[in-house]
Each structure stands twice: as structure tokens, then as C-alpha cells.
Length: 336
Ligand code: SAH
Ligand code: SF4
Image (cartoon, rainbow, N blue to C red):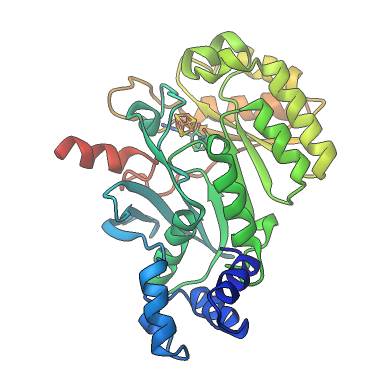
């Protein structure tokens, strides 16, 4: 609930509105049980227990990277469904990558999540619960959030927008919108809908190819929304929000990493206010894809730079702990 919804709920129950503020404070502290709300009379706590619940993400599995202290969680919810989150530590603080759905419908061929199908959407509170659980477990305060875990955020639009408002609110997690990044595979109408909301979040778009033909080989969504439409929507997103769009480009050996691909991409993106994140593809078991070597990664970035496009090769964190989302859940499903 938003603070306003909490006030109407509490007053409808016949309690004074300051009780809503007290409950809000406890929730902001991250309590997971109504009995911990010690300044509430027992009768209110009992009433809350019978009519409400606090979303909690339970740690099923936790892996800590030996190389860089990245933490990978497999969280479960009361219905038994599991999602993954990754906590990363940077010199300026902590960032978390959270999931927005259990699985994904989009079916990208390089992605472990896409390969294991879709179960259900997450609620806004289940997205918040991943952040709360990681903060509690590691006793840290998270300052940056990326929606790059399992799922396609824009395919769960209403819950994700609700999450963004709650996470960004002063009475919620109070993480500034500018510290939140939403990544999408390119659902054009939803990008346009998001632009209309003018939230100050960062938008990342998974491009992974210089043209529709190559894109459609790895991303079925390319058949529904051609790249020209997608890039137009990104242009309009920038015009509406003033936020520069990031393009993600996973370099896959022999598929999308040749010089001619970089030149074609450079041509298409040079008029956009954007940044390109080059990511050596994470070789997910069973996909047959391999990452481009270091030399290829650099050559690709250099060609883009020649078109005036800021391109960086993303550092890999947690490579020893299946930190690419979908891998851990898939393993645990296989075991079952
Ligand atoms: N569904 C959204 C967000 C979740 S995926 C999206 O597709 O953008 C987050 C990012 O991880 C996307 O850029 C996705 O393309 C990328 N990704 C998925 N599998 C990958 C892999 N095996 N190697 C590198 N990047 C991968
Ligand atoms: Fe879904 Fe994103 Fe994976 Fe594609 S890359 S299957 S959209 S999670």
C-alpha cells in the first residue's frame, strides 16, 4: 500500500490516522511481523494479522562470490515460487538486481530465464521484499536498484510502476528514481506508456543486434516490434523524460560481434542520445553461445566510439556463482 492507501485502510477500520503513520514507520524499518509493531495496541495487531500480510522473501539459497563478494540469492515466496536477486558492492555503495516475474514469456534464446518458461507475475511488494531481505541479511543499505533479474518488467507494467513509486517514495525505501534502472527487451507500446509517466528512472533496452534479421534469431520479440519502431520509442522516451537511454548488447561469438555489425549499429544509433553497454554473453548451459574474446570486445567498442557513441564493456561480477539471472532457479528446478 502507498501511505495514502494505508491511511484510508486504517481509518476505514475505525482507527485514528496516526496509526497508519506508525505502521508505515515499522514497514519502512523492514519488520516482517505485526507483533514487532510494539506501539500498536494488541487488538489492532490481531486485526491486522487476520486481514493483512507483509510480503517476505525467504532465502532458499545464498552464494557469495570468492572473487568480488557479489551475493546471489534464491528467494522463495509463500506459494513456493522462487526468484533470483544479486547484490553487488561498488565503491559508492550497494546495488541490487531484482526480479519482476517468476520466469519470463519472451523466450530469448541466450537467457536462462527465457529458457525455463513463465510461472507468474510478482506483486510490487514481492519486488520490495527482495530488497528488504538482502538489506537485512547483509546489514547494508542499498542505494541503487536495477530491474534486470528474472522477467520482463514491462510485461508486468502495473505492478512494476507501483513498485517504482513505492521504492522511490520518501516513506517507502526512499531510493531516488534516478538510482533505479528498468531494463526491457523492447515492448514498444509499453515504453511509450512509461514515457508518459515521466518518472526519472533510467531506461535500458536490450538490443543485442544491429538489425531485425539477427535480432529475431535470438529475441522473438523482434518479430512483434521492429527495431525502427523500437528506436523511435527510445527517441521519444528521451524527449519526454530527458533521460539518456542505455542499450545493452551481449556480444555473442560469431552471431553479432563482427566489425560490420558494429558499423551497422553505429550508423543506426549515432543520432540518439544513448550509451551502449557491451556485455560478453554469459554462456548459459544448453544454449551453445560463447562470449566474444577480449580483443573482439575492444574492437567493437572502438568502432562505436568512431561514430561518437559512448560504449563501455561491462565488468563481469559473480561469474563463479551463476549470477546471470535464471541460472540458479533453473538448476534447482532440475534437481526437483
Ligand atoms: N527482461 C528484461 C530484463 C531482464 S534480463 C530484458 O530483457 O531486458 C536483463 C539483461 O540480461 C538483458 O539485457 C538481457 O538481455 C541480459 N541477458 C540475459 N541472458 C544473458 C546472458 N546469458 N548473457 C548476457 N546477458 C544476458
Ligand atoms: Fe525475458 Fe529478458 Fe530473459 Fe529475454 S532476456 S527471456 S526478456 S528475462
